[in-house]
Length: 415
Image (cartoon, rainbow, N blue to C red; front, side):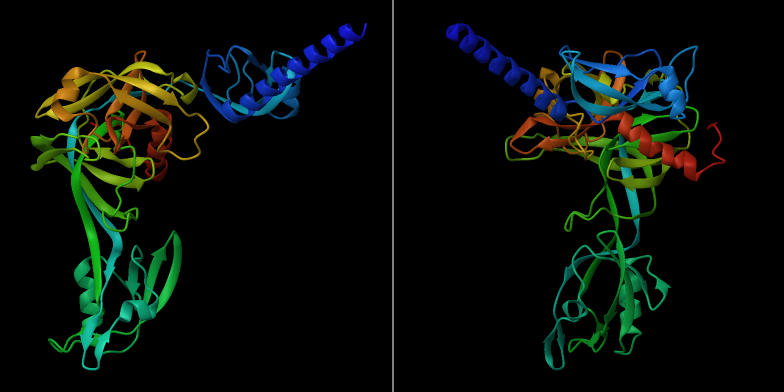
């Protein structure tokens, strides 16, 4: 009898441990939110189930419901392990399927900042010795100077002119630091070298480089690219966009990547302006093409439809040739709060490896295609392993691109 009790107790302990393990894993791995398209189901794995609330319960919560199809808005679902044990609640939103034309074309990027970025703060040799007006005022590298004495700062020369004309009197600088507006009082000093009033500040008002288009909307011309923000090379500050454009670019060569060395596509700008820039943010660079190409769009995958396994990227590593290259999605991170590590990808195509050594600068934005759907874009390369890098979900990039439509309510379909 005692042996039976001990055996039963041991079995219950093992069972409890297994159930507890399923609950812990489910809590960590299953996303808090799901975006699905009409007709699709929620994929939570073979050991878990997701139960939608009844129609009556949804009506009580004022959730939009279509008897002809399924939910058209959002609702909560209860995730259970082994169809019995509650794990967590998740929010499910059902949307219509989105479509976009995948890119892969290399582009030249010209970006002009709103204000200027402080990239260096030096001493000034004044008549009384070395002085550092920037440090005395409390300025820091990465600060964005927006106005001086109420006058808008548009380019580097505006700062020098305002300080020279100050006559040594204190000026008020309106700056942006870590997303917060601030003011500092700045007192220039007279340079012992040329007698002009100076501040010892190094500032930057623009950026230029090579990147790749991820997708575009053939009707509106709205495009997304890079999959990450353009940041100042010295301070790593996201450059606030005032204006900018993209141009055609001609590739001249490739610096191959290797462990510890980041490769790069080398190119020159052409003279044809392809579109205007509207957003420079964490999820990428966005704008409107003047004449989008009339190509066949692909369905855009929701985050939950992205899977580990074989896929392709569209990229241009030879001038004028946008080609498909084989990759593998190694990891999908649905619970990533940021936008830079949604998935890990690995180059498997021997042709691309021979040409570039893996992922190189300039390939950022290369669209990722899986199962005939646009699932994301390449964003970063691993320094110690150029065959691998991070990618961002296409669904996330589209959410940012939609802001252009919101800000341009009169945006008509492109000609």
